[in-house]
Length: 387
Image (cartoon, helix red, strand yellow):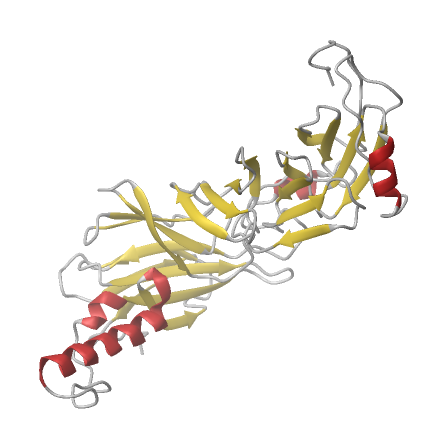
């Protein structure tokens, strides 16, 4: 660490390989995050007596603030360790007043530490949706920006610790399978997400923006994302990772979307998912999805204008109720699961295709067992497996 005014340097270290670093606004404190998930905070200057009295009441482990000295570092450097992260620390940042230290990583969570308090004083914001790889704080300290592994930047309020804005780009594609398709109905490209291989992302080509997501195989965010391994436990097995092995954090096998295909009218979607198991061959499922906006245009006897009054107002209310029911069932993805077929073939599926003829609801699958099957949609809007 180099003092900006005096040019004096002082060496500090962490317990493992350093993966993140942040310099305090007082220029006399530095935080090092390492591959074992430990944050080591170093104080490089002399301690002011005022801050010593305040920190003594918080316990011996509390950090006191060094007095600013423009002439250089004074006194011996001291350190304290903070540990919450189970994997490598991905990012660190101080707030402008130096009162808080932010940390994040592969756990898809933000940890807000009290920089001058005991190591146990922290707040955790979980379930951010993706691993965090970068942090930035606004000059007034009112907002935090989190750069995430899903190619998105989440803006969080420093007061409520809630995400208030989301800027998202095209997410890195999963390495396994051949799940790539194009929807001519909305000019969308569909491909799986690398940090969540069981999720399909829809990218609008006309506007060059992320439009929606479809969770085909529910799972933990970040399970398929590569992460820095602990320096004490890294070996050839943990480095492999990928959708067909154990996840990077030592959890269970990663499920992923292997194939995806649209019907000619793009009103139905066919997916094949693979769920590797520890002592068994991969378990696959064939799923058929229907577009929720296609269903809205169809007549449904369950909801009628008579239930909501007569005339145009009653018809409008009935339609709004119908849309609400279908959107609630399909979620924000715009797709609703209609049929699931477990183990469609005795061995793994090698290809999926839909008939190019408009109005024809026919899908074909091939397998490593040397067979192919045809899956027909006999009547709108249902799919069925061959008898």
